[in-house]
Length: 313
Image (cartoon, rainbow, N blue to C red; front, side, top):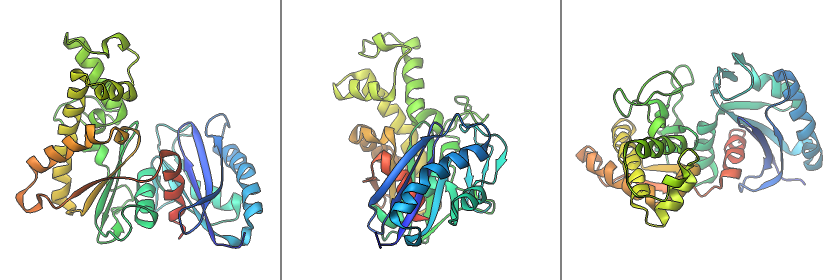
């Protein structure tokens, strides 16, 4: 291989995936290791080095222009993971330095949603856009805000936390310690909470009743696809809270588009059509019908690697 390549590393709670990516967003070599089970972070970094080095050798280390890593609570400014609740190491971890030293490649760190936003801007549906919001709907709600062609980091690197905007005053308890955060309603875990709560409170006939206690966002989607009124109402309720919150976000950055990514967004029109409806209904007049609702073209498996790698370019 002689083409320039960027290394992308996606550090998740259970798995770390990595790959070498060219300018056309093609992952030419890839692999993965478990994130857990290594003990101290230094042992994890050594295990990751052992897994990545063979693909660096195969590609030719001289062809690697640099790399990026996306991780929960990753701080672009400091290169540190700071108090990430879903990772096995606690406190402040200088991960960018540890990875750079181990691999002999300059690695930039970012939080996973910001990395995905940079990936959309570099390779994806946001290519050429200067103002957009990327929203990841997974276990939680993540986001990256791009304004005037630049990702918004704020003075400390933590700007753009859409998932922890209070969407419902005095609402559900969030893992962050606050009440009513958007991710307690509009994430994959949020829709399951809605389903389980409603099954307790109501007596509707629904395909989900026999799954009580074992419901997932996928089973809610499958029921909705079959026309289950209860499941469709869950999506409508979720879409209303999400759409109204996005209408507020539009008033702050005036984006050209809001791009959705992540497991729950795979529900497609069942979720995104009512999101658009409720967003437009509650939008300030000057912003009405100006903001496109788009879905990422990236697959879940590849997007995080692409996003992380894009920081190197």
